[in-house]
Figure 1: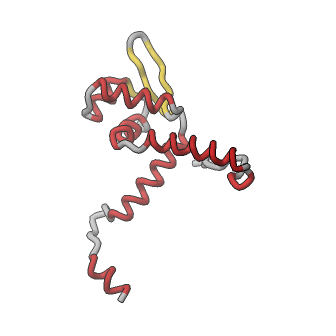
Figure 2: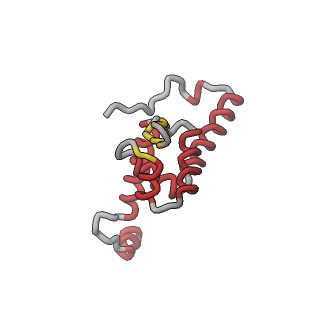
Figure 3: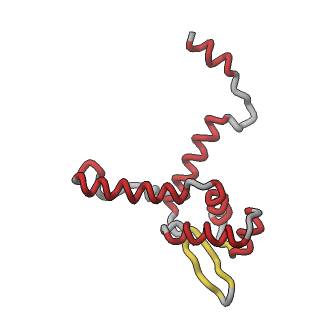
Length: 129
């Protein structure tokens, strides 16, 4: 997979005002992702285009709640939306966001050690003694 995470301009090349504006946008972007329901919706939609009712069924959330989250994800450019008749479908508009989420989920899974092995807290303490 080709990474779409590389920027053409480096943050270090920006002036203070430009950096502040960038950091405000990045903060806004991550605030949209800082909701477990939205992450569940992204997980569902990253498997392929889904209608609102398919997302509702997969995420076990109310239709109103799902619609609100889908709108937030669409408004910030993470999801694309198309209407066919009366049905609205959502798909991933920004693959880089999915790459970021997968990277973070992998890191946290490693920390949680979900692979079936339980961390031994005593072994960690013993290693530092």
